[in-house]
Amino acid sequence: MKNLYISAIAAVLAFACTQKKEKTADKPAAPRSRTVQADAFIAKTLALSEDIQVAGSLIPAEGTDIRPEISGRVVGIYFKEGSNVQKGALLAKLFDDDLQAQLKKLEVQLEINEKTVERYKALLKIQGISQQDVDLSELQVNNNKADIALVKVNITKTEIRAPYNGRIGLRNISLGAYVSPTDIIATIRQVDQLKLEFTVPEKYSTNFTPGKKISFYIDGVQKNFDATVLATEYFIDANTRSLTVKAMVKGNHPLLVPGAFAKVALDIDKDNNAIIVPTQAIIPLSRGKEVILYKGGAPQFVPVTTGIRDSSYIQIIQGVNIGDTVLISGLMAIKPNSEVKLSKIN
Image (cartoon, rainbow, N blue to C red):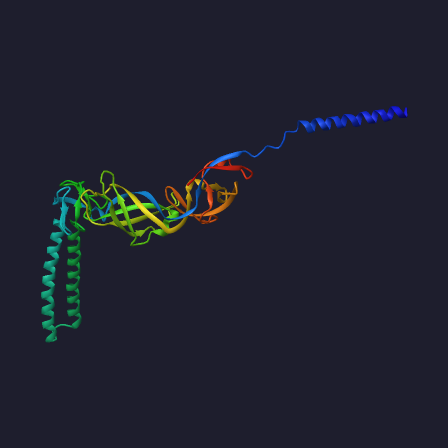
């Protein structure tokens, strides 16, 4: 019985060893690191500037909707649509016969009251009237003058004049029409001087200060035009995360018309001695960026801090030194234990 028990234990141990050997034999061997072909770039210094292009619009230096100050009937129109007008030119006239009649009445009253004052002053010298009576008559004269001034102001409001030199647009009224301050008679624009309006991304907002020189062009014209920044909006648009900029266009080219679409070329920043690598060498991470350096046949992943960029290169502020070999192709296939074979070095 004892021998039978020992035999059973030996059989169990033998079976367990056999299963362990089989599992060990079935386990795959550790994968060998494969060789990756990649191109490389030798980090160097280069004068680098960051240029962006944004859309803009040409607008008149000034633009005003001409409206009457008071309600009334149009009795005269004195401008030609699409013509240039001078500051102060009479554009339209409203009915004012009632105001003219009121003015004449007040002028007659003023003349009578002034004569009354003269008589009262003569009587005052012989003590035929009190000083109070003279003062009251003079007060009446002053009231007449104030009423006359008020009526003249109202008459002036019936004369609609150009606020500045400019080009008048299409008229929206006709003779005999009754207009109110909500009606637009026409629109006047100062077209001999234009402004350029455009927006820039939020991160570039500090680059635009009054006096900054910029250039732009419009489709169909093989020429660049210059402008000078006048001012910027005082806040960043919360929806577009951009800043609105206005610039004064230099000169007056006949092909530049209000409303034209413009493409603005902006030179944001420049470094004459920037350490650069191709933009495709940068690997974006959730928290930062990195590049892969080639050292001793092996890849080395290095975090970097970047600066300005153009269409081909990007500035490395920290992480890469001049002369470092930076891998620029096959980046997705390269692992920390990969063997790298360089195909081309730029």
